Length: 146
Image (cartoon, rainbow, N blue to C red; front, side):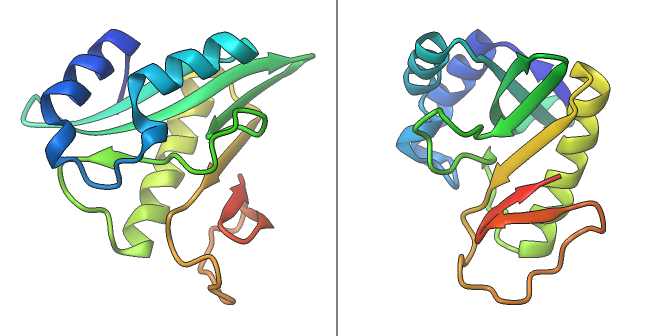
């Protein structure tokens, strides 16, 4: 995992837009840039490479509120209902997705000293028995505080 710039994300996104899995209007670089400017959150991007090829990007927002560093894909207040990874391959298995999110959480805590992480998932919101990590808490169906 590595942090990439908005410019790097935009170039990768535009080159691969038609073949990306889990793509939504919220993943568009112009949306992320406009939202970040409007609410003064920093857009951050975590890239996952294999054999030096960028395969997956997790766009997110970062901000400081008082003494706390907040990270979310997405954060509340961004008018972005879901975000999460956009990828050249599907991340369809819920367990794979949760493992990825847990690794992203650890990376964000190391890279930006994050105190609060939030993710919204594209998986079934009606899952009454999600398998979560011990330090996760459900905020509402499909959103998790880590």
